[in-house]
Structures are given as structure tokens and as C-alpha cells.
Length: 373
Image (cartoon, rainbow, N blue to C red):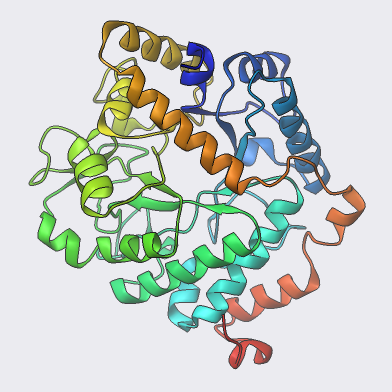
């Protein structure tokens, strides 16, 4: 078995405090072989700064015991969820793609966005949203959803996934099993839904099924409690959702990552030290911590104690560790970066700007009208 630090560290992703890597963050990542980091607005100033930060992050891989590459992730969906601002290409919300309804356009949208992410060193995008917008006033989703029609969402999710993959960025489909019907934002409170499993299967789950057929290798869970399916646990902490539904019924073999475990939907209802343990027991592989910088060390201690007490099984953790490492090694081809002169020619490329403007105007560029993907 791997040493405890690396075994547990590969199950945790963290946020960073600022525009540069702090010495204590660097040491924590190296010593614990942390799975990866997620970049937010506080970590982004302009392209060269993002590039230099990612370059330093990737250099840490060579300083770790097992040399497992880092996931360097970001939320880049388009619209209001976009951490990278101009001079990066500014992309419209996904609803625009659903309204235009050209899968070719959706493919090129994701491919072009992915090229810019990959250029500055980002290798994982928490996108696309596969949520079907069935509640129009949904505060969390809104125009982040492609459509209220599950079939439209499904086919465009597939095209977006293929576009990201083509650019060598790993996509992560979210928010399983669907956040489109909620009336509460899980950042603020725990959404409770009455939707039953049969309805989920015929509506919310269709885009996720399509994503799995498109060879997606990461799915993000939602912090929603479906009271008729699992009255005790929200999806992120529910074995019924992560293991019984996603793993066994839908046959998903990839990585399950939680949404941010610092959201009020988690911290207001469950003890902080129990959340990471329960998420892994339910079937998650990666625990996502975005904004609470003192919590990841506590989470690792909680996992270590749970392992010692037999609440977590070393064999299951080892299998999960090997799955994480395998998917990283298969998808992160290199931790070496382009020169910044090359990067400058990719970020905000005129072709990308033209594509974005066409989507914003509700049009398919003439050169893509007859194109196939």
C-alpha cells in the first residue's frame, strides 16, 4: 500500500489564497501529494500571471514522492461562471448554444475555450453543466443550463465534452444527478427536492447518460437531498446516488468529485470533520475544498482517523487512488509548458473572438454551417 499521506492526499483538491503560490501552500501540496488545485477569480489577474502560477504548480510534481501530476482546474462554463476575463476570450452562457442548437458550434466553443485553458497550464475544466432547467427561477443554474429540454441538453453536453477532449482539457460534467429543478442555491442552503427516481431517469439523467457514452471521466456530485430517494443524505454524501445509481446502474467507471464541501448545504447541516469521511464512504473519489484554507489539513486528519478506526477501508482507498493516478497519467500528457510567446498567440485568438461574437448574436459562423464533428 502507498504511504498514508499520498494515499489520502490524492483524494483532496484545494483552493489557493492569491495570485501567487504561498510557501505554506507549496509545502502542503508537496508533503501530502495533494490531488490538485482549483483557480478562482482571486487567483487570476492576467494571462501571464495565470501562466506563471500554473507553471509553478506543475513544477511541484517533480518534487513529490510519486511524481503524480496535479489537476489544475477552473470553472469556465461561459456566461457568468467564467474565471478568466479579457484578454482571454469571453464566452456567452450555455443557454445561447442551446437556443442556436448546433452541436457543431458547441463542439468548437469547447475546443476553442479548451485551447486557451491548456495554453496557460489548466488541464481540468469543471464543465459542462448537464443540468436541465426545469425550474425557471432557479437561482443557482439559470442560463448556465443549455435548455429545459433534456434531449437538447444531452446532445450538446456530448458535443461540449468532445470539444474539451480535443483540446486536451479534461471535462467534468456536473451537477449529478441534476441541479435544474432547485429553488435554493446550495452555496447558501441545502436544496430539498421531491423529484422521484423514475422522473430523474426520464429527465435529469438523460444528459448524464449521454455524457457517459461520450467517455467522460469525471462527474461532479450536487449537494441536493432528494427526500423520496434518500431522505437522510444529500447526493454528495449518499451511497444510493454515488454508488447504487452512478456506479452500478449507470456503469460509470471514472472519477466522482464532490462539489465544494465548504458550501452551506454541507457545513450548516453536517459536522465539518464528518463530511469528507462520509463522502468517500458514499463513493466519491475526490473531495473538493475551494475557499476554506484551514479545512483541508483537518479533512486529511479526519480521513486518517477514519482509516485507523476502520470507518474507511484501505483496500477501497487504494483502488480509488489507483483510479485517480491512472486517469491523470492517461490524460495529462505533459506537465511541460509552452513558451509564453506561444501562449500569447492562443489566448484571445481572433478566431475565438469571432466565434464567441457569433454565438452571442445567435448565429452559426458560415464556415461551420456545413461542418461535421
